[in-house]
Structures are given as structure tokens and as C-alpha cells.
Length: 400
Ligand SMILES: *Cc1c(COP(=O)(O)O)cnc(C)c1O
Ligand SMILES: [Zn+2]
Image 1 (spheres, rainbow, N blue to C red):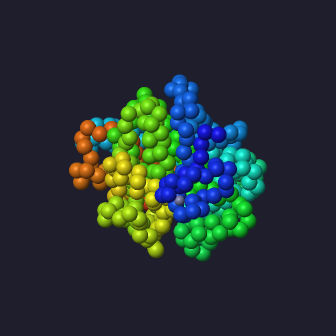
Image 2 (image 1 turned 90 degrees about the vertical axis):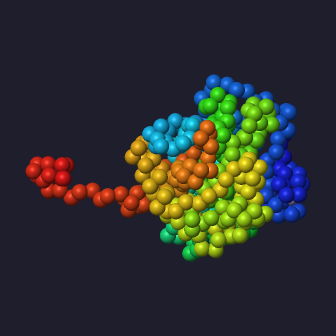
Image 3 (image 1 turned 120 degrees about the horizontal axis):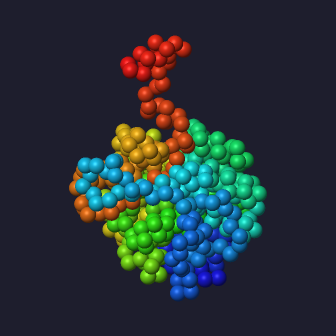
């Protein structure tokens, strides 16, 4: 095997077959490292997908796949009018099989679970992780257990977890508490934990970076902007760009720019104040439930990604999120859930504050599909008109 697990803090190395999620010696986060000199990475015309880049993925068996990745990178023109930016792209991860980027992590994570001989998979989730895990566990033929913050998960996501057959537990508590509990349950019963603290899951998510570079002719954008919740995705995408550069495939790394909601912004605060670690937010609150996380487990990786790449971190209000969501949908035809719209809300704010150069080429990631959260969509839109089944009434309503 040409990869190992390494602690990002003390640099200790571990066998990738060990069932560990953090460093047994210092408690630091782990990442998968490769002997890049032994990797045969080819630029090919093959259709983009997670498994196109299998030379840089840490699995040796046939993947558990339902064809994830290969999402569109849209060049956005109308929404960018009036913004002093060279080019804006949106990579719509909401078009993955279960409607979020989590599928990239789960195809690799669940395959790894099978490779390691694990019998049950588990996660805590703000919704999309559970929808995705339930789906991939179904495909793999193994049981899934998911812990949700009761009452705070969007309807579409719960529906997915249920129909794909997971055991769904609504915890009377928030996401951070659900994650603490599922970690205990996994330790106790030997379930395989597939939250983003699992370094193999993040390997799947780094393929977002590969696809962006691939589609831009193996060039990288100046900046990538995305929502930050548990902070796994920003860390994974940064790692992907770093590997491409180390392989000599590309020659730069985009400025990784993370956006959080005003009511839940521990990473932004740590960047603003130059702190080495985040201070958890005990009561995170935002309409963007996918990033309603006060104690992001991957904070240490995310802070490095933002700082080493020369990126930024800012927060946006729920109103800014909702108007970005509406504009993406009504101006560009891109339907996203609230958390996803933070990338575009953040871009607007950064441009307004003069924090982005006019010659930048920017990619915003929209992380999840609009159909995930129908309740929110109906709440923020004008209600349908109630009209009698009568042609005059219809005429009046159409032109009224
Ligand atoms: C999971 C998720 C996020 C947050 O990603 P992290 O890796 O936890 O930072 C953002 N948006 C959506 C739609 C998600 O499902
Ligand atoms: Zn360590």
C-alpha cells in the first residue's frame, strides 16, 4: 500500500488498517498521506467522477458506487453583473445522487468500511450525511445508524434516511451533542464512524478540487468559496489542490475562503482573532441547518487550509443567505438549500467590502440541492394564489 495515516499535530504515522479516527498518542486529527512519487496520475478525457481519480484514493477493492461526482461547473454571468470580478463559476454539488457533496465522501468511506470488514456504519448528522450514509449502506447491504438533532433537520433529508433504511434516532440536543454520542456508540459497539472526522471520507471529498482543475484545463481558480459547518469539506478540497500541486499537475493553490452563518461562526472568529484553536459556540443558530454547528471537529485542518492558502473567513446573515438562495434559483436556474447559498452570499459581501481582486477567477461551491428543504423554500416564497375554477378569476389572477 502506498498510503498511511498521519497525525496532523505530532506527525506520528499509523497503519491505514487500524480503526482509529484521531491520533492515539496526542488526540490530533488524522489524514491520509501518499507516497506521491509512486502514483501514476494521468490527465485523461474520461468522464469526470469521483472514481476517475482512483490513483489518489485509498481503497483497494471494487467501490460501492452510485455514480457520484461529475457535477457541473457553471459559468455564472447574470448573477455576477455589477460585481467587479473577472469570472465566477458555481460548482453545483447538489446534483450528486443523494443531492449533496456528502456522496463523494460516502462512496469512499463506505467502500473503506467494507474493505476493513466493518459490519455496521454510523454517523451524527445535520441531515445530508445521514441521507448519504443511509443510501450507500443500502447499496453495500449493511445497516446504518444515524443520530440527528431532533427538530432541526430538513424534511427531505429525514425522508431519505428513512426510505433508504437507516435506523434514525432523533436526539433531544444539537448536532455537536449527537456527534459526541455517536462517537461513544461507535467505540462501544465497533460501528464504523463516517462523520468527517473519518480521514477516508475526506479523501472522497477532495475530488471536488480534482474536478475543478480538470474542467479548467488543469488550471486552478484564484479562489474557492464554500460554506463551513464541521469544516471537513474546506479541508478536503484544500488537500486535493495541494496534492495536485505536489504532483506537478498544477502550479498554484486557490485561496480557500470559508463562509459561516452569523449565529454559528467559530472558525470566522478564530481567523479574525488569530487564535490557534476555535472557541466552540454553545448555541449555534441559523436557518442554514446544514452548517448549524458550534464545535466543528475539523477546525484544526480548516484553519490551516485558510491560513496556508491565504484565504479568508467571513459570516453572513440569514437574510443574506435567503436572498442569495433566491437569486441563484431565479436568475441562474440553480436550486440550492440555504447552507449552499452562503458561498454566493459570502462572495457578494467580500466584493462589497473590497476584499476580492477584480482579476480573480472564483469558484463558489453550492453544497446541497433545493429539494432537501421544501419547508424553508415554501416559507420564504410568496404563497400560491388561491383561485376559483373560473376563467375570469384566472384572468384576474394572471394579470393582477
Ligand atoms: C455538510 C454540509 C455542509 C458543511 O460541510 P462541512 O464539511 O461540515 O463543513 C454545507 N452545506 C451542506 C448542504 C452540507 O450538507
Ligand atoms: Zn498525534
